[in-house]
Length: 346
Image (cartoon, rainbow, N blue to C red):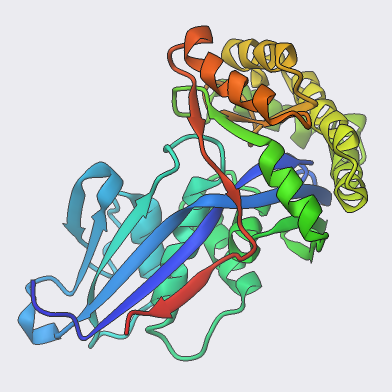
């Protein structure tokens, strides 16, 4: 490959512990969501090339899948990775610019941690450096969500993109879909460090995918009023989580996580699957204060666990994962103080 004229880097965090999820959707109309941005990041590295030195003007390298393919703007037959291809189409990079962009994430695909949103946010952030003007984090999140819902016609809430764009610990109020305000929770370092120490992310071993269960839940919620108890129970856990973090009250945060997971079960029992229940029982044995089935729930995906003060309990839990279920996988995480970051390599 020809030597690049410029190298643009961007990273965006994934999302865990989304208390209030399901209320950030069009059928909820309004909602409240608490979530936390964490490493591992989704990464995009964009190499700007001389147009006359390359055969294909735009190339995407999906590193996790070992795929490298050209993109033809205007051709909407997206058959490799539609989300990435649609993002390139939407950003409308000037015709005289050639580039190859590599996409990578250490988070497993289908972990229900907003990885696809983080990938899209990172990609948009890098492409934004090639167009006039600059997007705000909120505009990047809006654009990422619009690509999924309008260009790809997928069911998609707003919280994943917002968490990835802003990072940190967030309380999001969606006052009228898809418009929302994002309040970042600023807490003492000791609270931040303690929360980071206590959190555990466990992948259940198989990718989450939308299913008939989700379609059933969506159909049911579409027919319910926005203030129905099913949705209101979820909304309430977001404010409880916010207040608990501000107070440094980890038992209360754990209870809010449990309440949210129980509210998910009331939407449909299959949203908290057999593997998730097995992990919850193991977490209880090891003194966990709370557990949240990440994302919408259902088959596969992951759980966020909030452990007690004794660090050894967390380590014992992680050691016992494989013995409980060979598919369980601990994903090391760190709280991300920042959301989308974009910079040039010198």
